[in-house]
Each structure stands twice: as C-alpha cells, then as structure tokens.
Image (cartoon, rainbow, N blue to C red; front, side, top):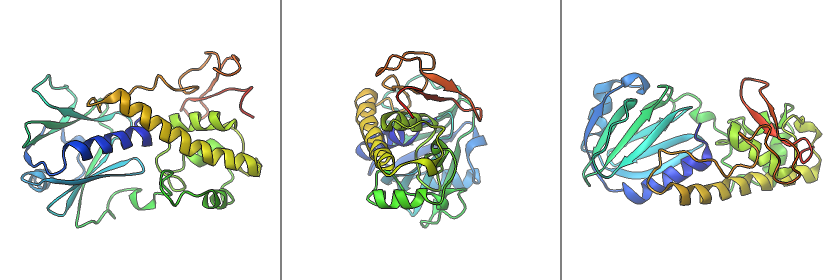
Length: 268
C-alpha cells in the first residue's frame, strides 16, 4: 500500500509535469472505484486544467481550475501511471485522462479497492475519514510538544498509535516498522511505557525515515510513479533475514493479519 513517502513523490512529480495542462478527454473503463456519478465525473474533468496537486495523509488531491478537485485514495493496490508515449494498457486500468500535452494520466487497480472522489468548491465533507485526519508528520504542526501531548491520550501498542490516521496522517504498516526500528522501540510496547527520551527519539525517527525515504524513492522512480520499490527497507518485509545492525534474525508477526517486522535485540 502506498504511504506518505510514495504519495509525496507522486505529488511532487505531478506538480512538475501537469500543472496548467488541460484534460482533453476522459475514458472510464472500470467504474467500480469511482464514488460519484459517471456523467458528473467526466463532465467535471473534461476541458479542465490542473492547478495544483496536494497530499493530505494518504489522499492525493488533484485541484483543477474550475473549482473541482479529483481526490484519490489509492488504498492497497491503486496506482497512478504517467504515460508519455502510447503503450500497452494495463487490463486493470480504471480510467484514463488524455492530456493536452500528448501525455496520459492513468489509474489502474489490481484489486479495485481504491476510491476516487470529486470535491467541488473545496468541500470534502462527503469523503470518508478525510476531515478526521491528524497531524501531517512533515508539517510544522508536528512538533515534539504536540507529539508528546497526543501520546498522553493513547494507550495501545505504539505501532497502532503512530498508524492511527486521526493522530498522525500518512504513516502505514510498512513505514511504521522502519520508524520504530530507527527509534530502537519494539512495536509491541504500550505507548504509556515510553520514556521521555524514547518519545523524542521516536519523533525524530518519524521525520527522518519519511524524509529520507522520499529522497530515495524520488531518485529511484523517475517518471515511473506507478512502481513501488522498497528494497531500501531495513526490517519491513525482511522476516527471518538478519538484522543489518546486530545480525539477529528479524522477527515477523501477524497479530492483526498485517505483517509486523522488528529486531528483538535492537528494539526494546
């Protein structure tokens, strides 16, 4: 599932490549992911131009000139694909935006789990969970003081706490493992047991892991914004492999059906 770093890279790429570009045609091939009337979807996008692309949590907001925003929640398997030249159409393509600069922006989804919305006149109230998003960890509001204060009201396992989108938006299952590894904190620890210095380490790790990942992904991805490469991860997805720091085998758990990886030696 794409998380904050991947979405930030997509946002930056689109801001560099589609701003001011007009959508000349819309081709809907699989409407299941579109959460509005199809006629409204095509009519609102056609002959409209991109004004700005924004990210909020795990949502991408493609703001258009005529007071409408295309809001994309990629969920587990949704991907945006930027096409410069005619190419093979992925059979799971849901829609194509034909652009005036001879390019296409395609959305495909292997499981059709994504959710695509239209928001008019800056009204996002109909989009589930959107208005309940918590602090963005890359923003100025994500201070150590606010982080400490927010932890006081949360008593669960720390991994569940930092992936709670109402507290901190954008961090998911994969990057939480990487963050906790850098901070040296077990994902199974109760948030109430964290010492002040551990909270500070965790706050620093959140910022650093996300920022460093954005830089790495941006260099790896180029125009292939639909591809997801996480070979730089230290623990997530590396169950039973040796820890890069202590060489102890990385533990893999599935307490809630989602994979959690951590090092029992390095993380306490």
